Amino acid sequence: SAVQKLIKSLEDIETLLFDPKLPKLDTTIAKISRDEEKVLKFEREAEKQRLADEAKARKLQEQEAKRKSKEEAAEKKRREKEEAARAREDAKRRKEEEKEQQEQAKKREEEKKKKSLVKQKSSFFSYFSSAPKKSPP
Image (cartoon, rainbow, N blue to C red):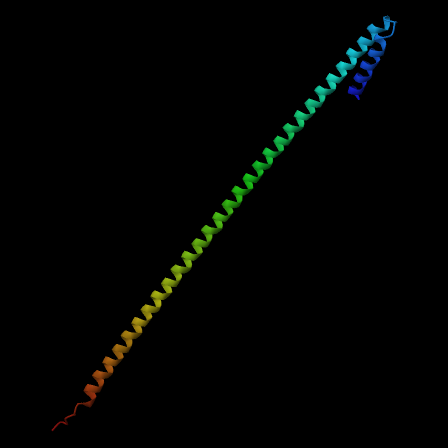
């Protein structure tokens, strides 16, 4: 590539330095300068490409991190919603159970009162019905 051309040009200039024909030396030096410019340009382009690739990779990492944090936030929000719904359902169930227990206690109390009343009535009836009846004279 460009580096190999530069090395070849340097080798050519070395052979020409020892050659008695010096007029070719100026054109060879110009050729070396052009080749050196090509190598420098190649290096600059390679550095630009490396920096562009690094920037692209960094941008992709940032986007991935942003996407991941959004997903985690959405997942956290979803879990919180589920937990709140579960808590509401548990509270509702407990309230219903308490209401049912109260109703059952109330029914038992009413039953107890009824039985007591029935017992009382039967006691009164038995008292009055067992009394001797007097017949009119």
